Image (cartoon, rainbow, N blue to C red; front, side, top):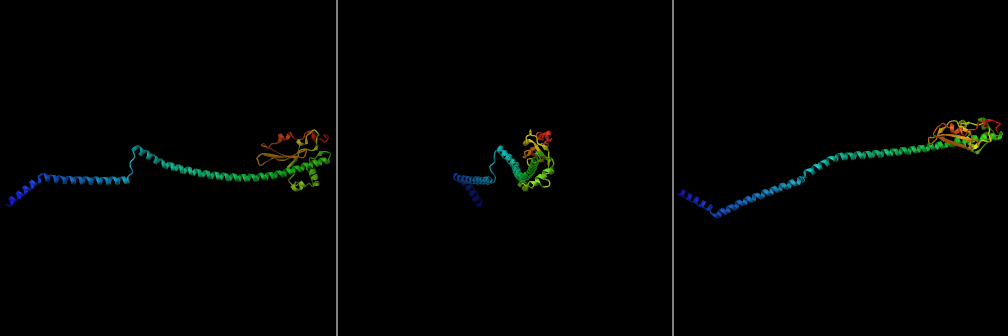
Length: 252
């Protein structure tokens, strides 16, 4: 009896499963499960995509990416060049500053040297002027005859207490030793005293402009500093030296 009941129940169950209603609801359940699984899969995939997008930037096309890498590679050398340029500019500024300071110091030195030479020149011209006036005084006392002896001129100067000589101290021990007399005798009437040298420095010297200079006194008493690029003044002097006949006492 039991076996018979089991067989009847199994047959009844199989019949129920094969009915249209049961088949319909079973299919709905399966489709729902599949839809739910697909939705979960899509949500998981979307979450993974968002995670990747938050970490990695969007990819560039291959040519643009290569160009970007090339430009990045040039940044380092360019920065190095900029550093070198800044260093070179700084060194140039330092060099210019040192040059300006050196030029300023040189200018101050040249100014001081120029002033020193100017003072020396004034003193030497004063000595030449005093000696030339002594020669004129001597010639006036000796019938127009110029003396070529320093002792005669110094004697006349010692008797002439001029204010200029007292101020400039022109009779110092070496004042007259730097000059030579180049004329003696009566001065000829056919020569121009303003163009005839009677006294000159023994040696030329370099002035503040780095030119050779020499002081001359003329027969009319004026004094001049002549300068030249050449230390040889012989050609210029030859045109202004007394004529040979001027040395004769019978010329005047």
